[in-house]
Image (tube, rainbow, N blue to C red; front, side, top):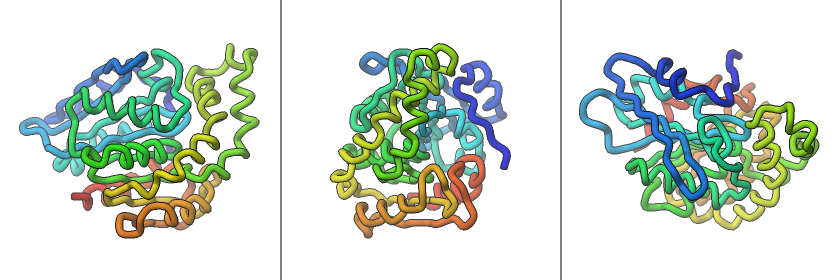
Length: 265
């Protein structure tokens, strides 16, 4: 397995990585409430596709987790591709992280709408999964598809990480840890309660939803599969269980994720 977690790559570095013939790259910092959210979008030179795939990272993380997708030519032939840094991560470090799932979902949607993207397919990895799901539930007219990658949806899956979250929230450790880890600690302490609040909202999802999950995921245990399957209406939901796979699907399952996205719409 070959992956890394770059918590805050600069605009310049990401622009250089994405610099590819016939691909238009746009980097924006969108003000929403007390935050400025970094959004990077790519599309083929010429007419911009009407449909947009938006990638939402986990905790910790950044849009860099999906940067390989932003230059995938097969996806660019069909979609505008968008990566967004959630508040408190990556290029969206202005202001504190947002602890609530609902508030995060609404802030992200405001930024996406300000940037002018529409006909959205949301891709959420790890804790980005329930945030993307909340966006789909609350904005059914904007979201036409949902792809969950190893989502942490079940509140009971979270308490085992409380020690790690408490460690990062104490002042001596805050001085030496990266901002992304400190912000993740603040956010993670609220995860179980926030996931419990979300439970009543899963049934409001009206768009096609595909859930990819590894059977050896130690961060989002396989119980998340049964949990999610029982809450999202069966008519909209499809589970794809991946044998011998772990939590890091954006790095290990690029081709499978691309295949699923190309089948949407």
